[in-house]
Length: 354
Image 1 (cartoon, rainbow, N blue to C red):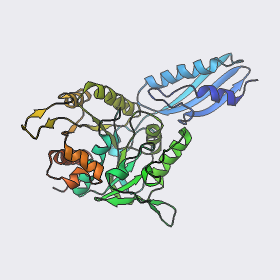
Image 2 (tube, rainbow, N blue to C red):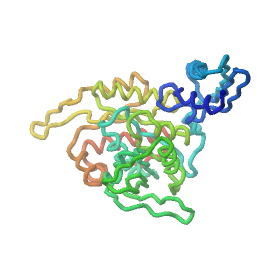
Image 3 (spheres, rainbow, N blue to C red):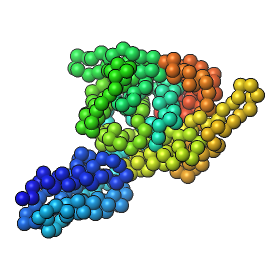
Image 4 (cartoon, one colour):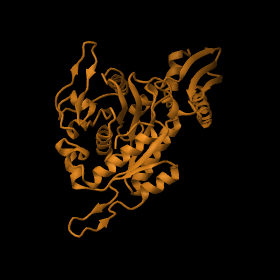
């Protein structure tokens, strides 16, 4: 006999368009009813892309129609208009909640690993702090947290009287990471629901205080953590990190499309490992190609925040626990990060100290 559990189980096979997460765990199902073989499913989505509800309608019908005893499927989809000016309201897609005391939440993302996203995030945060902003940084990569190493922090965070985690502070940046809670060589083994839970706790149960910007260092890809974030809090926007080479740009476009689907504006691109200046001959070499980030920024009609050179100082600074902006402020890489922070501050209408 047909049951609601059977219908709900079938709906778990329907993915939100462009993502790996299903519409049930994403919280889109608002009601299920059935009688005499006729099933009605109610959904609610927030999107400005009319293709999304159309694709969901087809997916739901196909999934439910396959169940034994189903003769007819009706799908009711309520479409909420996203905030038209996300930058003005501080809102993104599904997450309408802000974190008290935080003016802007900015995600830093990449479509693939290995492009130096965490290096960019850490230096961007330090540069923003040096420009006089109150800055926080949340390492959202639960499986491969790296901010502890990049800031030279191994101590576990303390807990406040109201049972909130107290972030560490280094180089003027308030920091929280899964890496602070586990040993360096301990693997983090989490399934989907636990990933969602931990991510929400790091966002809402940390004593962030008053911040101008909270940077979120996202893991590569478009998985559960990304969806949890856009569902939990209102993002002011995202910064996408890439290298000039086409293989990285292909994945950067995926990240950009992911944010477009959930109505989060792209604040700008950072082209990392843009070029290398040989210390022997002083010549500039484009090891990973040339101009890819600039062309992509023009293509997407967004700001190119900076072109960061490939430098030993930047790499070694991350390994020794003091980001290059703090340890090598006169390097070309540090200047690029400072430039990016200043541009980002202007985009967010924040007062930058020169």
